[in-house]
Length: 384
Image (cartoon, rainbow, N blue to C red):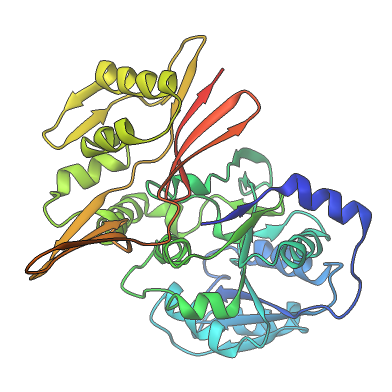
């Protein structure tokens, strides 16, 4: 996943701002019996935050699941500028997919009925960054609030950790519609975590992104995922296994990914052959071996902080799984079980090697920080 530096875009925004034709954005909100759930006042806050946006070319679509408690009448009263569709559906993500079909905008945002935009400029800021970067989707940090509107926490955005957890709140994401459609939309087999599955699909399909250096949305405690934490966690484990786990990885290892870092031992062999800084290379090996547990083909790093406490700091960020697919005369090597980066073909009298055009291993320098990347994703960071 290619990421754009927000500081460079900020400079461009300060220099010039194109006020030409605005791309249409469709904001999709889903509802069901919100009066019975005593969430009507939160819905009003959600609607007001959408209607107060400074960005002009917005359509708001409400997909209601056939409410029977007076919610439809509330929608017609409070959301008179919105397009309202009320009919039975098969859950949250079936409703989101339905909203995608109705949406006429080039860009899509999903804002749950409990949640709301932080500022009247939330959409305008996001669209500025999307236009200047031409990224496929944007995201930002998010406020986590209680029913009184008090901020409980700031939910960080860490797209490099998409392998292990939800990398950012989907309420902050604005994405090109064609990009979501290309990824297949939401998988309705998941009841609570199909947004996580979609983000993984976007990244693995090569979607580009830009981070908005402003907190654009508020995510309210008490939603479906908050009340069903165990189901949400179980679905996330299944999603990780589907996308990343090799065929012979058992459920216990996949479960551990959510709480620990598992490093394939073959990664150290690759590391030895890379052109990474020798001191950094040795430091990474020492850290893993000193703090890791031998699991056969993996090293388990059981350290919640993931940060070595020393003058020379090392941060372990992200570990991909490697997969080898053996065909009759060919071996194919994959990263993330999706991206083929190397192939060996054996003929009767020769062996052909093919390296695909992927940034598999690289190093980058940012001031006092050196980073080691695999497939354009940071694995280790070293701080001088």
